[in-house]
Amino acid sequence: MSKVCQITGKKAMTGNNVSHSKRRTKRRFNVNVSTRKFYWPEQDVWIRLTVSAHGLRIINRIGLDAALKKAAKDGHLTEFRTL
Image 1: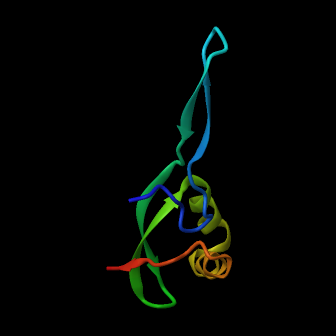
Image 2: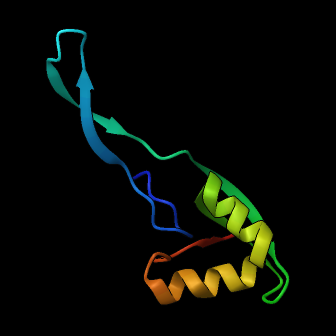
């Protein structure tokens, strides 16, 4: 499964490892994502989302329903699993 947040759309970035001699090699900066279950009271279902730490803060701040609507409008939320 790819490491992409379904709420914010964050995904891995690339950069360089820089050694002491300034030699550069490619590396990846992965996103801090985890799979979480949320209860969605408007639909009366449990859903499973792959969400980053920043996405969890957004859900706590504006609520699950508003976060899902915003993610769907921005095109980050492709599909989620109902349990």
